[in-house]
Image (cartoon, helix red, strand yellow):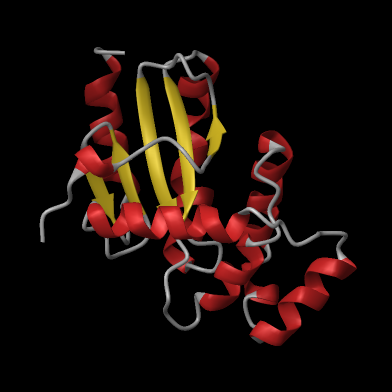
Length: 174
């Protein structure tokens, strides 16, 4: 199935970097997905310089994929405050770092985990997740992470060398 980049939006996301950046990297991720964790910890840090220089903006979109064991990530996403972009991005990084711990929780334990850590259920997040699910369906995205660098898609297990080579080739255009 062919991905349809024309259905990708920059809404309903955590943005890292300037809205004026010429290159948008749209990242469909899930907090519980091991491949999303790998991307965040091994590949995304190499984007930092591009972000500081104003060349790239990361657009993170949590995909509430209905698949075991991703449901706990879906539920945890309901506690993220998308109004506080920087703080929420830092929190997402902590969740990825500790995925091996909270990722083993049952769905019934996530609300308790969230409240113990001072998180409140965000009323708007369910509707946001539904909008992202519709966007994902229209764009034919089935796997996570799916990362769009411009219109080029990197899907599921993303290899650093391939991603880095593509970014270096783009660098002259930025």
